[in-house]
Image 1: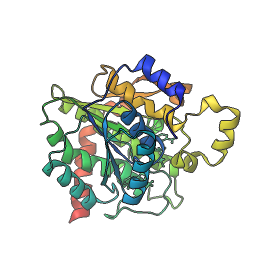
Image 2: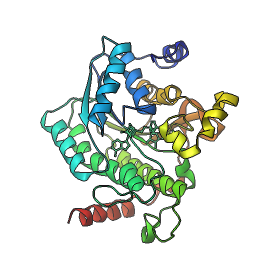
Image 3: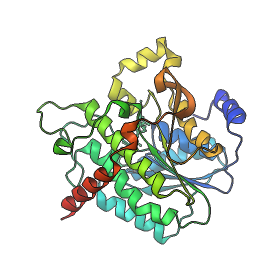
Amino acid sequence: MSLSDKTKRWLNENCKISLKGKTVLVTGANSGVGFKMAEISAYLGADVILACRNKERAKEARLRLIGDHPEASISVMQLDLASLSSIEVFCEELVSSQVDIDAFVNNAGVFRQPGKKTADGFDLVIGTNYIGTYYLSERLLPYLSSLPHEVVYVNTISIIHKIATVDYADFYYEREKRYRAFPVYARSKLCLARYTYAQAKRYAGSNVRMMMNHPGMTITPMGLNAFGNGIGRLAGVVGPLINSPEKSALSLAYILSHEIPSGSIIGPNKGFGGWGYPEMNRIGQRVKEGAEELIRFTDIEIEKAKA
Ligand SMILES: NC(=O)c1ccc[n+]([C@@H]2O[C@H](COP(=O)([O-])OP(=O)(O)OC[C@H]3O[C@@H](n4cnc5c(N)ncnc54)[C@H](OP(=O)(O)O)[C@@H]3O)[C@@H](O)[C@H]2O)c1
């Protein structure tokens, strides 16, 4: 389905950019918000790379995009964030081929995966959303910071990070027998936000602009997993209070077309970040503090998993 006239109008009025000659890479781009970010980037003229765990789904997404945007240059890469070795192969391919990237969007993520683990034995939600994204970022940022132009690096968090906590004694919520889907997910996103905020400081003055975005409540396969099928029915009643993937995906064009300081969070402007069009959000203390300990802990976890 191509972009709606409303989206095109909004882009025209609020994001006056052309991405011609730029390359945008989006992870988890075969579905939901990631697919729409890829589509908006193609519409604005970018060359787009779809980095997906399943190459067949990626190819199918590419065909859908080409169908609506025949002039677009769209390629696919394989990346499974739930596997450290897949991340290594992906980064090696990107760096050794010197792929030129202007915007890199870590959009892929999962919610509610009781009892499931990554290939390296981490809880699947924390392992994918945080540890996988961390491992990828640590490998790519040195390369991206060597490119001779600005690179916008976006990590996708969630508004729920605002109520999350980090407990290193029970990092994966294994102490309780009951699976706690929202706390686990919220922790994965708080850790990602803390890490991203710290990286913004580390790369201050470089060509890399570290950004965070959160889509609000969005009707996607993950949104349905989080809020239940009722969200679909609810959307029929209170449609404007829940974002479509297309509306949530506008955050990328907003970030690319505005001079937003590195380390900022962009999210919907209504309902305490639940829905609406993108704007800059306030950053809470829990994001700003504790990154050193988190990074130390994460490096040890990764070392242990690889040993
Ligand atoms: N929807 C919401 O209400 C909401 C709210 C807050 C934040 N978010 C965040 O927004 C982002 C996009 O989510 P969405 O709602 O658009 O969900 P979605 O439609 O379910 O898309 C998630 C994408 O992530 C990919 N993915 C999952 N595990 C992966 C892995 N191990 N390696 C690589 N890719 C993987 C999925 O691939 P497959 O298709 O192969 O599974 C899919 O392409 C996520 O980071 C999510 O946490 C969403």
